[in-house]
Image (cartoon, rainbow, N blue to C red; front, side, top):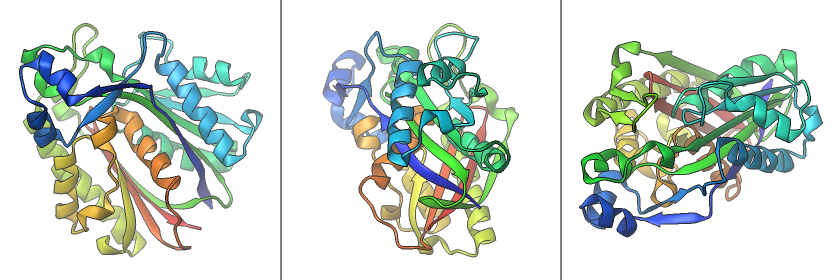
Length: 310
């Protein structure tokens, strides 16, 4: 049995409101809220990068799991917004955590990277030992605050999340998962080597609305659980309207989809774990209750993971 022992998160202190962005993007705060569900987001300071944020979230997770860094046997770090082409941030995060020669793997999958990291960890933990999954994103460095780019610039914020996955009992037992990729649409959401994020919003919403519900339905069917029987859906916080659409598509009550996008915006691969950490800190599940994770991101990559409370 493989389980999630704990979650962790870290968010920058600077709050950026819709009013602040609207003044630069030639739009209104109400328009931003209507198209995204976002009221504010966090921007990292100049000295806060993917590595520093990832380390802070990792430490929060290890503290909550009552696990020493020396007990971690594998580190997986997801980020699509690292400051350089190579090396990725995983080795630097490992070094700052004092992991010595513990292997550290980068998963440069924007938005869906934390979910892919969790699936990898669930597979590897029985053989390797405890696996720490970290997702950290500095998306504010990948946008342009100009009216021509407002459709993407309003969405993104910065932050980091983490979870510890290991064999044996924990907070949530991992039941099954489903992941997929489709490179036919890769050009519709990308961050080039130079310039800001490029996104075909219509294509992203259409593909996410089709592929995520399919993955969710697959893991629930395999687990013998009806959508209405899931205690909470912890989804990548991309856009509130998209989350509502996914809820309707799978036939689950919208209020079962945990949402904090109004306060943090879209933090790409970090968002699902930030949401999970916040949810876990405020909720107690009964034994056997189900939790469904889901994400969709650049590539396109997507998936769902089903877990049950111990």
